[in-house]
Length: 174
Image (cartoon, rainbow, N blue to C red):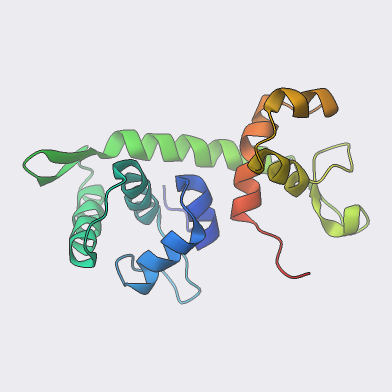
């Protein structure tokens, strides 16, 4: 997958905070693919692995980890070993991310953005219900059952991906 991602999109897809993603860029662990910055799929694999490991490594070790991971992906390796008892299943991480990103992009194509509806906010089809609104409700911890009672026309996929949309495309300003 040769997609390019913003740091916010990357953070959403790998379930990290944008601050953690920007920190990896600031410390020059992840090399952006442009000046904007934009991140490669390999960077997402690295970030997802970092989230899953949930262990603090030095900047030097994280840099080595990222470089070995990028090389392994380029060589189409299924695993990459970093230490005697530490290896990553690249195929599992790559497949999980690819499926999530594909599902998200397909779902996103059905959303509606119209300057004449809700001030241009992205809404669910055939409604005036903002995706950000649902994402915020879920992010605050409201149960899916309660949301489905209030908005029965929302699908399970809407409720799964709205919080990712909120994190990937935060509303700036105001």
